[in-house]
Image: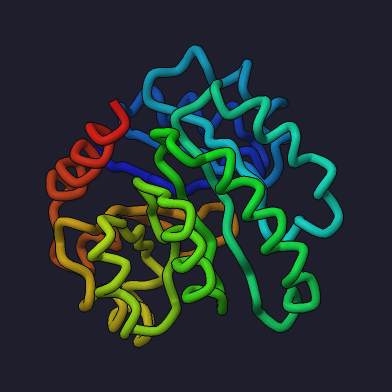
Length: 228
């Protein structure tokens, strides 16, 4: 069984064809959304599926223009066990919105406090700041998606019980392999980040690392048990 913990199928050319294919193969995919309004659009289409899930998201790159959607995040949170994509992005293109990103994320984390959800986070160039905020709000069950931050921070992230989702592109890059080498096997999950990631074949990622699908399944089941 292939498990994709971070996919943007709502951004694909034919989302309906894709999710029907996933459901028929028996694989598991968790679809990220970039805004609560996107989640609202997709929710009724997804709720009938057993293997396909939809996460409630608020992407940091959209925080400045869509901060008015924060009340919707709280409204829809009870409809799903999955949250994503949320987080911070302090790369050169988005550093100018740093303060509003932090403000929006704090509002989201306040809503998430004490709630058992599986949460996929975006942390580009803001890994330390994001990790600190997650601890401040005692947020559990976090998956760091496509981590590319300091190697020295990985052990701290692991110590808090968090996971990392890897994709094929990571297994093909020097930095990605260095990150993966620091992660214990029992904290590895898989992702595609499709359609934004061209190297998104999860089976190829597992072959590149010499890992088996059942390892990822065990890790995912362990994480799922935490929210039940």
